[in-house]
Image (cartoon, rainbow, N blue to C red):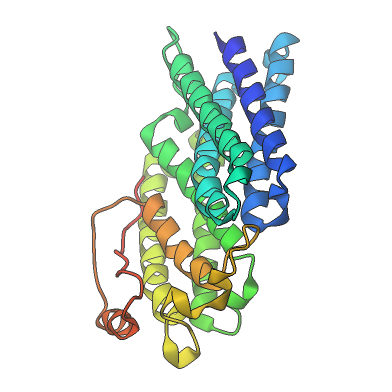
Length: 302
């Protein structure tokens, strides 16, 4: 079963990559992110398949089952992000409907890859006497989702003009980086079986890191929209005011969309229910008329 799923993963990621490359997907940041995901998952799955066929699982200094579960969980989350971001950002800007065929089929294969990786995780957990790895648990999946969404945010932040020379926005970027490191540390500590060497229980460390991430992300969710959509700082409140947004170039994302994508990514990353609205933020949106809706401030989960 595992070998069949891995072959399906290889085929679907290879097809997604090949079809995406045939339409020049690599020319923009979002296309580069999608292409990287499909290539990374293909290479990683190929290496895992080679190791299993050669019977080398016992030669590694870590638990192969835990490593395999971690790779499958990350691959599933990565393919899911590509299956959402690629069609939403890329396909809708293609002017000729005849050009939609290959990107849509590429998205379909990306969805198939996601299902294959998710089935692999489920099949691994269903094995008798199988010790469930950290990444196969709900907290582990949330930590993995947090790091992946952070990577998506970094893709949108590749345009440094969004935050340079604004201390508040630079602080937001620092928050995204710090929280990414904290989540990565929690995953690596558990994956490397170093949790027994900690001076405090791993569960306590996880709670501390989560609370710290809550505080940091809350400040970022407050500051980012306030400064990005502030007319006094020369920012644009309405999407229609950004001429780049109407150019219809599928290989790039206009500045206004990049500004809005960062807090919206945080919403997808942390589907909590805590909502707060700043009076200054509400005033800015009302003045903008057709500006974006007020963004709920949602805490970190996991």
